[in-house]
Image 1: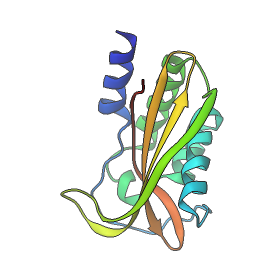
Image 2: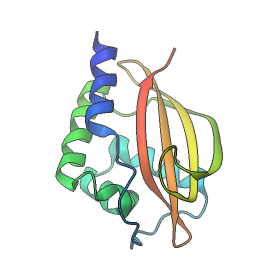
Image 3: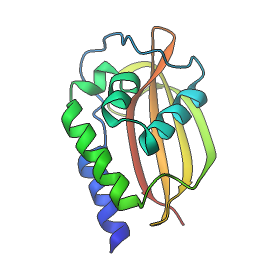
Image 4: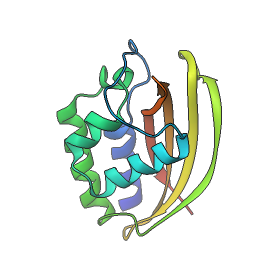
Length: 145
């Protein structure tokens, strides 16, 4: 039951929107998509949620999720997951040029399997290249076996 609640919360509260107008971010993020995704996931675990939003979330996604909603969602997730990830395994990633039923552009999809004290989870991160940096356009998680 806890897994279902965690997954439901993720789908309802933590999934970042895909549409809106793209605008450059002033955040200094890595030019390598894997490094950017791992920086974002590390920040989700232990960084300041507001600073994480400011640095890592693409403007296109900010049009759909406010900073306050993001911060509250991360704080709830941290309680539900039992703390920071105890392990992180890169499953795979691929460049994509269009989000399903969405905009075209320079995107990158990555999947990680992370171990938490509450349960293992798959984290899916979709990044958008903005001014040579990779920013988070969408992320979600689901139970992992």
